[in-house]
Image (cartoon, rainbow, N blue to C red; front, side):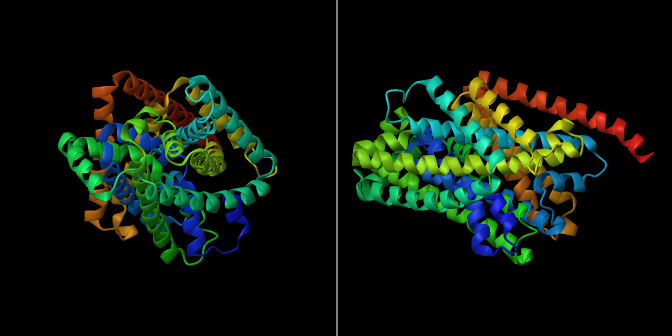
Length: 442
């Protein structure tokens, strides 16, 4: 998809919205659905909407910074330019954003494998899922290295096809639902009585990772028509459409599939439930949608993150060999990201990967909001909205941390250790860069 953008001389609003939706509507919704229903039941659509509102808060600062800097380096470049004298800040944001992408890459691959084998005897085999997830990352890494042009064409088809398939799945499930609207509202009221507002907000914060990808629009700033108008229009429209798609999918599942089945088969809930309602055709349709969604997201994430890693490595904040390119392709970065994502799949479960990704992108988005507040006069940003973004994103991150500490402290410990390691590596490379710069200037 990214390569397709580079071939186009000018991109209009429709193309930019498609780019953002291609990055957002990946495997996340399939994975989050089961986890969300297990926590708050029929209140899941509400949590999805709140998660979208949190994403809109994050988007506000990205839009303002994107219009001010007009730099396709997006997150990393924004922070580096806002804090030009802080090497550690630049290094840290680089490490955090890349590992955030790596976690979403692992999540999409895990979703691909869970649905790909959901109708087989290996559906509940953890190591089969992990093995296939690692294999599909390897396949897309090979394709990105071998033929970027071909991958761009394939991904365009996958993006539009998956949106059609997901819409069909949702409509068919709602039409064949076992629950009528009145019963659903009654069940929602019951869940509201037995769920705290904090539970809803925690799930909303976890769903944030499903909206990651809207910033891909900014990467196309050099190829788009009228950035002043189209950057905000494309990003906000794409988030709104993603909210709509996610809510319709969740409603279709909740109308048609018993809650206990969604919870029991949460890693491939939609396929299992659709099979019970619609038979083999329903199962196959859901599996196709999930595979298309996760495949396009894997490809786009791997393509974009590898190039951003190469830029960061060229600045000296990752090992230099990751910046090397062959035929303008950062092959070392592609391989490096694929290997780390595979390692994350091996050592972590689905929820660990999901929550690490959500925390990371909430943290990075919070840093973007803080950066935007620092130069709010230059970016012509509203002080109120910028502060609201900081508070909302910060509160979301705190809620996930609270949930982890109170429910799965071992998992939270693993996440904390990973952040300490990332911070230490960022500090080492920032220190190394500080030692090199005087000699370069001389």
